[in-house]
Length: 320
Image (cartoon, rainbow, N blue to C red; front, side, top):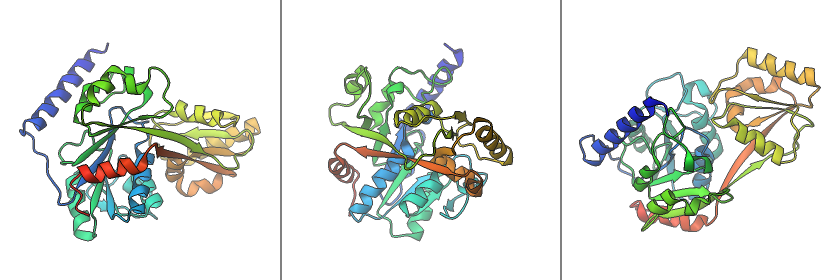
């Protein structure tokens, strides 16, 4: 094991202890905060989950906004995301959320300041905090943590991908596990069982990739935390890629990247290109050069969505 893993774990434990004891302060907003986060570095489906939860809230007529750090943006400060803007200013995931949900999305290093701006500008009733489990400087009323099957036996950074140990699930109000997770079964895994009772909600989530009219033998490319997971989903959908091309997570595509992808298509006589919604955001206007380009959508659904939303509203001091 990397010796830095012990240092990282000790530093994280100390930080959490300081928040637990009130030495480090969590700032509270006027309206309830519902956090969506995870334990590992990327790949848990937080952004699709935020979108899915947002759609459920909209069905109830609940006014909400989304608070995000805006990872990877070149700007600093607090900004309301312009859906017609670009990833460099707001970050790819906040921009995608704003476009899909059509609600205010506010980015800021301080999510508390982002929330204050939101409360001053809109008639919001609830804040959704994107990727917020580790952002403890903002008080939250309901904590949702998404787990992947890979998290169950992973290690802390830098030896593994975990930002916190499984024991941190004790802070969560709801744990979301894959509906079709392979053995070991997430629901009976010792750590999940230990921290999911009593009074802990455990929800099942299904991940489904939606692809319409994929070109024959496409060049499949992505810039995700877990690219191999996306490639496997593509193949499981019956699509035979001519090539699979990985870029670093949150990568913003430039002229060199476009030339590279076009060269791969020409060399392999591929029928076109296939990528993700997040990558489409980072492609920007360059999408027009990759023709034909099909965008795969990742849709997540909760096994019992009505019960989940009721639990969130009841346990987050939602005033309605």
